[in-house]
Image (cartoon, rainbow over all chains, first blue to last red; front, side, top):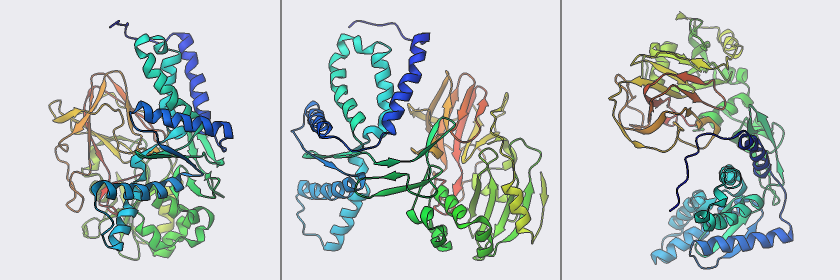
Length: 327
Length: 147
């Protein structure tokens, strides 16, 4: 096999192309709109090629209006296919069947590929193919012919769900709202969905955190119980912010146990240990670099925790005085 | 550290937290002794002995699990590798209530200075050495913080 020198440095011309590929593929990732009739044909051919390259029989290709259709139909199909393969039949109780079907639906992404959402990988591979010369190497010709099919699907379509028998391909959203922050596209909208699909399915984000619709559209409907039961720390933070920080403290009847002013250390910020009306202790503070305020729950059985430092030691597992720098 | 014990003024404390000025500039650490730590959000890098045990190389430079923006704590540099973590740093106390091992992250082995980056938090420039990653606990889910 022919050997090639290791590339250790990009030429100025190659460096210039980085921005071109970044911008081109960012457009692909953020693209919206429905497929034309011609594009639908291309997609169907590309999916069949993808199966052929994987030595699978030709699938039935179904184009669906949104990923939620794919998740539900794909999940149900996965459950049916699994039962058939296991030769279980459908003798289980309806309750067990429902649970299994729900689980399959929740795990729909195990059989999914991201389409344009995974465009970053394509950007990387295309850059090396087109700019760095890998596309000219004879031994990679077949690989790149196969990759061209993947690239077509990445450019034209959104998520796809694949089974041995059929493939569902989702249309892209018809509306997508993002903000560019420090070079990162963050989905964010305070008065509507960030993603809207042709079948009416919508997704809502605040500062890149996916939240239930009412957190954006009807924050008055957020309840203290809902905030307390949310398992994701970022969603909890956003919910509290939407609920209203002052309102949250007032409604929980919080009492201040201790407050720290960490003026001695770079990047540090004040924080407080609070006790809400349920007896729950919360360490409230910022991380020193993002300006966000976090509420960190202290377990109820840790009654000896009475200072912010003790609370922090408990959360991070070691003596906080060992931290040299924080952000 | 100055600590004030108070019992009543929630509003004042809350205002102080809300108005604290964030510092987004890169934190540079030219020297870090074994046993000391840098913190980036919910991710901690403990400087450990060079002999600190680790598993096989992970082939990634992301030191937190996940695909969200919050999880993108990434080490960048020419001579930096990331290995599976097998042991918490000496002196680390994992609360019994937590799912055991949930705060253990990978091991970072840096033969050259490197930068711990994140799309939202300030970056940390760190010297050569071996670092054990741990995560902050979330006592709602009883696991490491998910963000």
